[in-house]
Length: 178
Image (cartoon, rainbow, N blue to C red; front, side):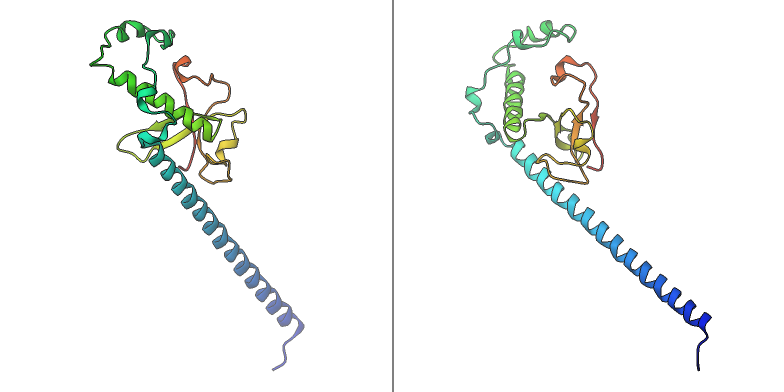
């Protein structure tokens, strides 16, 4: 049976569209696989970093060399903070030492990435990440702690706030798809 010109054109159009849609489908599968691989890589990196951060060996100096928190080092912007610290005794200084240890760990993070300004951990959740700050508020939407492209990004503070959280009564942490 001989096909007419319209039938040939229709078949060419139909097979062309089928090839186009198969190509689009394959490209979409590739994008989903690439995004999944990016999330897996970033998740592993953050998990490893969280395990390192949780270790007392994470700091460069030993815990005994970490200076204890003194009243003079307390930000005065917080109301009645000095009177709350006045009751710290050697027995109750565990919190002060923990604060000093946390500051030493943040300094270690800063050695790894100078834009690190903190760490956020919410017990009972999967939230256990570094917090960054840079002049470009969009950078850490698409980059991880190691400055690599990442769909997950990294948590960060607004660039306009002071890099000392204690100077800000309310600080918003931005991030997505963690």
